[in-house]
Structures are given as C-alpha cells and as structure tokens.
Length: 207
Image (cartoon, rainbow, N blue to C red; front, side, top):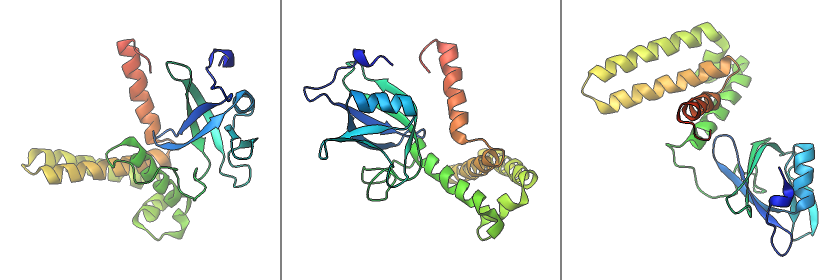
C-alpha cells in the first residue's frame, strides 16, 4: 500500500473500519501515518488514540488483537476498510462488535458466529455434553454419514409441497456440512471465497 496516496484529515488522521472475514463490522477507529505503517509492518492493527494522543495496538492489554488480512482504501482514499482476523471480542465491553444488535440472521456474519460456536464445540468434543460435541467425538466418518443423510432428507422434502420442511432440512444439511468442513480443518468461509473467486474468474470482475 502506498501511504502517500491516502488522504489524511487536517488532524493527520484517517478512519479505519474493521471487518472480519465473515463480513461483520467489528469497530471503527482512527489511524495516523505511524499507526498505519506499524500495522503494515507488524501485521497487527494499530490505531491512534485521540483521547490519549498516543499509538495503541488493539489488544495490547486485553490480548484481543486484530491480525491484519488486508487494507482497502475507499474511492476517495480518505477512509480504510481493514479486513482482520479477530483474536477475541473487539469491543471494550467484551462484545464481538462495537455496534449494538445482532447481524441480520440471513447474512454471512451470523454464519460466521455459528461456525465459531461449532468450533468451540469441536474443541471440547471430549466432554461429550451436547449433540455436536458427541458427533465431533465420533469423527469424520460419522459426520460425513450425517451429511449424506441430511442431503437425502433435503431431496425428499423438495418433492413434497411443504416449504417450511424443505427449508428446515436444508438448514440441517448446511449445519452438518459446516461440521464436516471444520472436522477436516476447513471453513464455510473458505467455500464462500472459492465461489467468489470463481465468479470473478468467469466475469472478469474483482474478486
């Protein structure tokens, strides 16, 4: 990134909007040239605190760092979209996002939250408490079998005149497919990225 091409305000600052890979907006803060350069050099998002008049790396005290993935300036180069991998909540209140309310449930951010929950169930599979913990404990073969079973249920439901049943079975399939992806060390977000890239390759547009 060419920092000299950015338009900083009269106070030497530029706003940075932090978004995670699921698409959820985590927070908004300000960067000066030094904060941006440190972010690029270290790979961890650093801001300028207007109240303290000092640089601060997100998570330097809480441990909830933001691992940099990509920075994109807007069309006027006077604002930054910062794509990051959060290492914990991003708000000082202990919530994932500084913005109140839940993401619209049909959007990818909510699927990202669901995947994070499934990942935590996988990490505690040896405890065997919930359905997902027990299924993760049984391994890839059992989870794969459930995906096949749920796919069959979707096909059967598609032949019936019951839209609610069809949508419900599709939700079950997506749920178990995400479990299988996580069991194999993959992610639903990676699948979305592949679809996104395929679309870009075929249309010639940006990914």
